[in-house]
Image 1 (cartoon, rainbow, N blue to C red):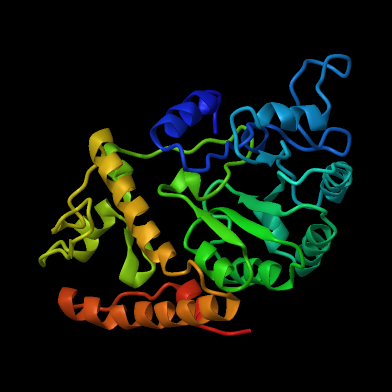
Image 2 (cartoon, helix red, strand yellow):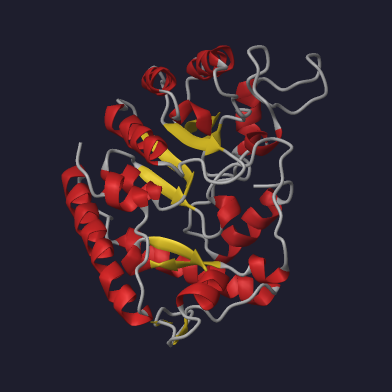
Amino acid sequence: MGGDAPKFAQQIRRANPNLPVIIEPLALSTHWATEDEPFLRRGSDNTFQLSLDAELDWQRMDSDLAITPTGQIRKNDSAALKAALREANKLDRADLLFAIPVAAGWLSEPQLTKQLIAVINRSRHPVLLTFTDPTNPVGSMSRARAYRQIFQEATVPVLAYRADLVGFDALAHGAIASAIGSYPKLRRLTPVGGRGGAIDREDMSPHMMITDMLRIVRSTHMRRDWFAGVNPIHCFCSICRGEALDRLHGEEPERRIGHNHNVVSLDSLYSLYIDLDEPGRRALWARQVAGALDTYPQLESHIGRPLKVDNILEKVWATTS
């Protein structure tokens, strides 16, 4: 993603010639979709703009798959959503993902979720689905249930894109794959023109994946809250090599260490799903969720006080539907 993505893609491809490389179109983060212009294409006006097909051919010069350059779709903007579907369905290609980047509000109202599912199911192409929000698009129980519903009811292949650990719930309920970010900005799409920031350097310490808990927790929070008066837990992944999980601060080299820890941890968890069919993935996810719930009493015993169990873990992921 970003303007330098083709250059980085070439570097990655040279170092890893057998690794598929897919570039995210800038439109997903920079363009608002409208009924008249659901896609962002190269060119300054209608006279010089590339056709959508030509735009995708241009993408394929650097990317192993083409992704429609769909702009972000505001809540309730059914016209823009349907316009994107109409134009994508005109394309006769076997190398295409139809990107649907929609506001998280589409998960908040049942009728909007149903409408989104209906559009997905009318797509000729596999769908790359992602949600926009300034913080966490799937941060409530109602949205987590709606998110699961989409993958359960989809009749075309859907990729859960820019997800957090909810991507594993999607994988267990019908998603063909999940793209889970190693740090917060890669676990969502920020609305066009929006930006976030940290209060101080300590608040920029990396969010660390705790595999057994199915939880991502900022290093600062563990250091100040969980382990202020007791020994921290240690991580034995190939990045941490037995060091304390709460050791990292906000400087960029330490943030990179934390992000690399997350990549390794997510890859370890994701690798267990390879070659499993959907019932097998669902059974594995159920075991992992049950195991995560069991870690809370152990951690509470260690730190000497109760911890709040995440509502989505306890009341959504731990339930069947």
